[in-house]
Image (cartoon, rainbow, N blue to C red):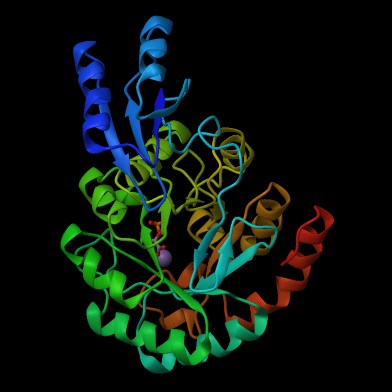
Length: 337
Ligand code: PEP
Ligand code: MN
């Protein structure tokens, strides 16, 4: 159950809701964000208790929710969530293109890529300065110096920015440099990090974990929301299967499944799913056709010498070439790009 608290409720009135819940030994958590205060209950109480709750002066409504995630559920909010990040709307009618290098490497690299992306209609430029690498010997990212280059590129090329955050201590500093924070697949269940980005005040792209079920993914979104941040963008980036011809297996069915369960926008990262450039146009078209609200694609000016993920990074020109096809697919399903 999700209890929505009236805007006019006093602290004492809210306290009496909690007292009643404690009395009935019902696990719960108060969640506040910029627009509302709600109390999420671990389960659904009996009809008798629900009646008692609804009579309390602080309670606006008490909604029964059958899924373990509550704030993220369609039952809690039937209308789609549209997220605003530095002038870009994510989750509206327009399919949003997000692209850029895996790692930020230099000012020159960002400029070369940004000019082309902007011309192709990219609204959000990606680029990471803190990298979750499988090997400790691989490039770990430029750190804050890279973020300064990223925010410089944002101002110069007029695109919103997204970058990955890997640990709690960096959240505040990173949030000062970029418009959207990204939680990588490997950190999808780093619950303390999810709580920290919940308090960051910035929209968050939450990548699906390598072996995460859709329910686990949505419960991770719930962590961010329960800690004050309603602006979560889900990102399907492929999951681990027995198949070896691609780096991961893009779970296209997760898009319509997620749309049946939540009001949050969902985007697709075909680059980390495929691990190779030749499949990216087909997977991107399929993702839009399946209802994705955006794409997150790796583009590099010199993929052969990229410091990370060169094999799956498209040249700017190769990216630009398939954008008209993406537009046709978007228009075929009544959206724009
Ligand atoms: C990335 O976006 O560069 C990245 C590391 O992605 P993922 O967390 O999906 O592997
Ligand atoms: Mn990458």
